[in-house]
Image (tube, rainbow, N blue to C red; front, side, top):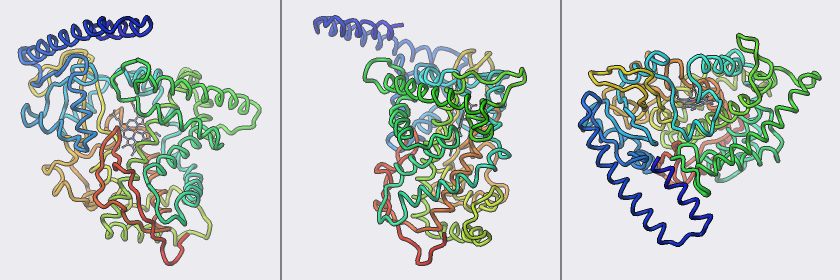
Length: 497
Ligand code: HEM
């Protein structure tokens, strides 16, 4: 309320060009009120018996700035470690405007993953909800199950296997255009462009350069505004993201209309891409998704599906440059697969199943630099966890950072060691880059497909050396080397392609 009033006074003042004194008085009162609520909220955390210990921080922003600050400094764990040391594996904070209980252990992960729709439901901050509207990420219960079922018609392995060759040939084109023959490249921007183009092609057959460029520009603005405090004022990251999302929806809207006509006329295939799947598949009631639902879900998949994979591929290239013995092992595996194929024959689903070592390398990269840091749930009823009361309506957060680098679960946790994924692998609920339970990432097989196909093609072509050895990786909002990972490419003496 206080915040809304503040915003509306500021907006009015901007429109009327009122004198600065008005602002000063208002700002002073606002800061005074904020401080007052800060004291009250912290007092309440201690005094409210039964809830997990912790502090709420400042009104509205809570401890969000510290949470995001630790990520941007490259140490997302610090936020959690400092609190678990003080309060234990379950503690209270306030993130993006909500009191939030953070669960920091494999038991906490298991509890949240297995109680979806029983005690908790998925619940992202309002900034995410407002931007993604009627997509899977904002729906719960039966609505979410329905959307998930329809999206999985495209994302399940049986459907994806038909797209492996297309991904392989796109990857070869991308490498030929942007990597091969170059002395030095900056990996992250190229990989973002690679995963974005791939997603645009497979989701909506968008492959015309002008359309891609237009979408890309809007997307870059959109991505920056997603995990922000939702201050809807001109110039804020959130406000720009809202406008960018509308522009993207408009572009998708025209594509949907054209596709409907093409499908009806038999000029497009129902198995052509995600869009065709969504237009051709119906739910149990015999209804297909509305145009708005299709736009929102494609927007979500483009968002969830391109930055995550490009971030993972970038850190993967970094680790392979730093660990030449792992690179050699990946190369051996990929050359074995390449050697079993006819000249010019594209990769197939079965080839991906043989890339066992390469996938362990990718998993180890995801352990050390998970693309997604965790996600939110909301209590649909009051319940007790570990002796603490979680009030109805409160948010909860699970985080990969509570287990991925802990020596209790991973020996020498800071060492890059793909062999830890051999055999049974890590203990249950300790390695959770894709989450778990009914809300587990539905794009995990798609991500595996993109990552392995890229790896296959790049190692066949070259080795690479880091231009800035030891380049720091920050998280904003995905892990990213601060300079985008410039690398020197070293082509093989023999050509394996
Ligand atoms: C390395 C790549 C990826 C990682 C690490 C990753 C990780 C995650 C995580 C941790 C979640 C949250 C799960 C939860 O709430 O418990 C999630 C959700 C989601 N991911 Fe991914 N993801 C990746 C790639 C993809 C791709 C390629 C797509 C799409 C093709 C995708 C689509 C989604 C969607 C739609 C959700 C929301 C699911 C829901 O709310 O039910 N992700 N992902």
